[in-house]
Length: 263
Image (cartoon, rainbow, N blue to C red; front, side, top):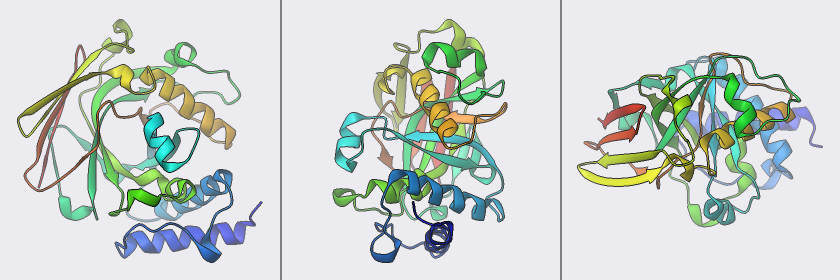
């Protein structure tokens, strides 16, 4: 296992890369990571650096790489997670400044708000995680990939870099999710007037499955989901890379819509 001093050095290196708006590069040489476990240790150290600054406190988490095709591209077997910070949360309708990102990607998701703390060590799946959820809402995930080259991504670097978490735009929370079959609930995206449709189950078969996976992942790291945390459960549609003037409305049938413009 890599010693904590070296983990902290790598976290500082990533912190400085974000501060200087440098292009995303795989960690190599002295900064290279030998395992995904060490990558999460770097992520946690990086998050602690950010919590002491303008990003504010951690208010939730995202799950990434929910698609098998994307996992195959990156070379990992499992999805990954990252933290979301208070300063990066927007309410619908939102105007998102393109200048705040090196490159802004948009994903289209169901977000969950936890109603109770999730105890660590609890066997969790889509069914057993549900009682811990208070509300759900349509949401955009904001991706900050810092203009990464997707042809040779290193999975450990992506994890260490907080899984490219750039924030979220949230629609109104609703408890009506309990009445829906989240494996088959229709969703629709209007992006600059062009429409596309999918179902919530495009995220790991059921977004509650994504939520349970994230809860188990945090538990394995000695962390846990807390009441009030917001969790992004994975995109139902392909990522869009934003440009100024883009207008998006994402609707989850039975739960409402979320809207944003790129300024």
